[in-house]
Each structure stands twice: as C-alpha cells, then as structure tokens.
Image (cartoon, rainbow, N blue to C red; front, side, top):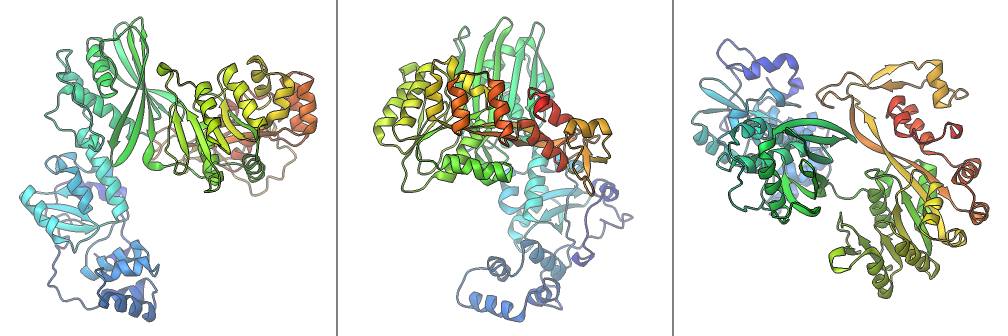
Length: 610
C-alpha cells in the first residue's frame, strides 16, 4: 500500500483501526515497518519530478544549495523555494519508503488509553501519535519517518513493536489535541470524586502550562476547573457561565452567541468551585458580598487564552462568568471583517480622517472591539501617535500606547482621556463612551484636531444620536464632531459540511425583499441536521453584518433640528445606506447563513427598511 493510491481513512476503515490488528485483518495486519536499509529504486528527487512536477533545474538548484553547507534536508529547501508543497513532499517520501499516507485520521475512534503514559509535549515536539494497537504492535502516525529516535523512545515507553504510517503535521497536531482532550475530559468522574468542599492550597495555573497536561495527582476541584476551561476552548465557547441555584450549580457555555447547558454540579461543591476560580484569578476568596473582576492567563492545546473573570454575588451563591479570548489567533485585518466592498471603502475613508469622531455601535458581544482593533491596525504607521484607553486591554498592538482603566485608583475613561490629550496624539481610541464626562471630552478632542474612535451601546446607527443627546451633548455638538457611525452584529455561519440546499417559497422571497432580483443560478441554503464538524448544531462560527451611516451636511442639519432617530434612519436609507437587515439578507443570498438566522439577528430592524 503506497501513497500513490491517494489513500484516506474512511468510515468503513475505522473498525480496522480500532479492532485488534490480527493476521486476518488485511488492511492493517501487514502494514510495513520502516526499513531504512531497504534498497530504493528511485531517489526522492526523481519521485518529486514525476509526482510533483518539479523541473530538473529546480532540483539541481536545491542540491547545489544543500551542497554549499546548508544544514537542511533537500525537501525543506524545495519547500522554502516554493518548488513543492509540504503535502507533495510528504506523499513523495511515503512513496519512496513504501509507507501508507493518510489525509485524515479517525480522531473520534482512537483509544485515549493509547496516550495515557505518553506526555503530550513529546507527541507535539515529534509530530507523532499512536492511533491503533493489537496484541503485538502499536500503529503510530508520524510526519517525519526519518526521525527514528522518538520512535525508539516510544517503543520503550509502550514496550511493543512500532508500525509506522504517515500523515501531515497539521493533521497529527489536530489529532493530538483531540485525543488528549478526550483522555483528560473526565469532568463527571471528577465531580464524583468531590466528597468534601475543599481546595487545599493556593496553587496557581502557570501561564506556560498546558491544561491538557493536567495530572491525575492534582486535586479533583483543580482538575474540574482545568477540565471546564479545556472543554470550553475545544468547543470554541466565548463564555463559561457558572450559575448557582437552590439545589444545583448549572454550567453553560456560550457558543456562536447562544447558551448551551453543559453540566450540573452538586450545590455542596459551589464554595470549592468559586474559591478555586477566584484563586487563579487572584481575587479575594474571603469577599463573598461584593462583585469582583479578575483575569486568568492559561494555555490549552498550545493556544494562549486570556480569561476575563466576573464574580457576582446572588441569593443562591456566587455567579461566575468567564470570557475566553484566544490571544494566539491575533487581531484580524480590516479586510477580514466581512464588510461589504462598498461599506469597506467608505469606512476606510472615515478612519483615515484627520479629525472627528467615528463610533462603532452594537450590543455586548457584537464584534465592536474587534472592528475597532482592526481599524487601528489599518491606520497605524510610524508617522502617527495612537493612544488608547480601554477596559480592559484585550489585544496588545505593536506601536500603539494602550492604557487600562483602573477605577479603584481613579483612572477612569474620562481621567485617562484628559491625560492622553497631553501626550500629543493624532488618534485616540476610547474603549467605550459610557458617561457624559467621557462624551464631552471626546467631542472636545475631535474638535481640536484629533481623530477619536470609540464604541457605544445602541441598537443601530441612527439611535446613536439619541443616546449621545441623553448623555447631555447638544445636537449641534454631535453634528459638528461626528463623522459616521457603523453598527455591527454577528450572525451564525451555516456549516458548509451539512447545510441543505432548498428552493425558498414566495413568502420567504418576499421577506428577503428580493422579488425583483434575478435569482437564476442562485442557491439558497438552510441549516442541516448537524454533523461532527458543527457538533450537531447546523452552524459553525460567526461572521459580521454591518450598517454604516455617513454624516453628510443634510444629515447634520437634520440632527441639529433634534428629530427622532427614525427620521434620521429613513434619510440615511434614502441616501443609499444598507441596513443591518440588508447586510444579513445579502449573506443569505451568498449562501453563508440562513434566512431564519438573518431575521432573528436583525429583528430590531424595522421592516420598512428592507
């Protein structure tokens, strides 16, 4: 069996992987062991010429580089020169060594006990993972079969013969995380072990320690908290809610904007659980009457996660919410924010202005901060001075001075903003305009030659004017300072693996407002029944929808008259503004989300603006 067969593990193969690999199993029993002394008929270069379509000149150049003392393998040089891809190289190597190559591994069916005596870091460092075993052998997936030393170590650890198969480093890395997660996912078992409400010591989570490396020797409450955090990261949850009630504690995860029940913990363990979480968040465990906020840096599956911790006393105990921020994913560029091309161009011109205020609006968790960070990256350059005041600082941006609000010592948004203006900034970013004092200082800053970017909580762009008036600003101040407002929401994306194509009924076409649109060749999709990719939800991930209002002279004159927000919005629509619902419906037409999701997310949008 060679790589030339373009082999891939399928559902039908899974029993062969999991069942004992005995002599009557034709697929796995006789997988070739690695024989480095076997005479190969062709060199790796010859195989790449045949199978990867590299030229003789490219191969010659790579060999010359290698012969000049470069301490690199031939394949690595070819990859760096973009002559071959990593997958092409691995397939060629598998063919040369007569080893099977798999595009996928049966992650869900690999027995977690295979790795119970193997450190996760050993598997990650050497890009290998045991995937199956029988009475005499363990089959190990590797990305580099020429690295024989870790295979020898594994042979000693497992005390068995090793059979080698090949896969890509990415596939192996993903499989390692999933298998070790399952090996450590023993939350219910941990709950059963909790016989007394104690935590025993103030151990702190090390920032460099991976939670998947948790030891069975750790106390149950520690493993329970670590397991909750690891599971939340695995399921791509944005928040963990720990909610005490009269007889139990309910744990819920917010995934793609919706809360899902995950676990129930006996009420008697509530004190231990909250104390452990408060300890790692460096909060006062003796204070149970006042709200507390903290921060927990952790690492899960190689990802650096920043956890924002909020503890709130309730009648049944302390309610805890932990917001998870994946720092390893970094900040998206403005081009990646899903803005419509026309909206993108107009918004980019706004944030490149020399002075004035640009506001991002929407409810909590709608993507406001992400859009602001992307905007700062787009306009950051060595010739401008950018300062921010945030609560808290979510991402560290190179070349940007970032200040974190500390209300306990008097460093509020307003106080910080006053000091920032003495630092000769070109651009000021305020995390949120939440009070009259901050709003007035922001207006003054924009009128004295500064570009001010900030967020505000309103339902849509036009409502922002009403909110600022409620804060005590005069309509003429708003009209003179505000350049534009962009409203943002997040809608769930259809799972591309299980979404269902369908023909919308006339009523749905009318709801979308596209009766007069040519739909020839258009495919409409709705959520399917769910699959392994989306964990049975029919949706996987979220994307942004946007509504941008540019404040031109006519809109400014309307604002000065102190009219209702509905009139301002109608004027914006007459001038070509696309509402949040328009943006969501466009995602439906593009097959990215469902009509149900679009309507539900934008139900605050008046139907007259379709």
